[in-house]
Image (cartoon, rainbow, N blue to C red; front, side, top):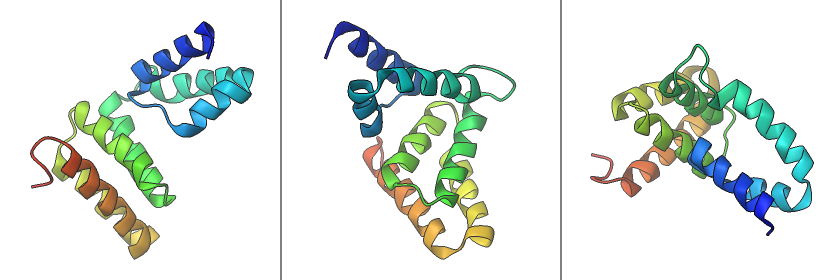
Length: 126
């Protein structure tokens, strides 16, 4: 991987707190698309605007759970929400908000991501 690509991955990791496999594919296969994608993500998500990072991450947890995203993706945003001041109770409440409009399977997927994420954190889920 050349220096420009390595620099971009490092910037993404520093800004987001994680890099997903699809980011790695795009950086190798379509760097120009990834640059444009990152510009939109930066403006909408990672740049400081009106909402603080904690609130944005709680919204992400809700939306990703509602869309039944993968547990690793939901878990990445649970971790970031906690790193930005969200409590376990707040995250669980966000997940509970998903249940009425989205149903049991999506709720369970979110709770499983919550359990796995907290189990990997210091102190576990308790």
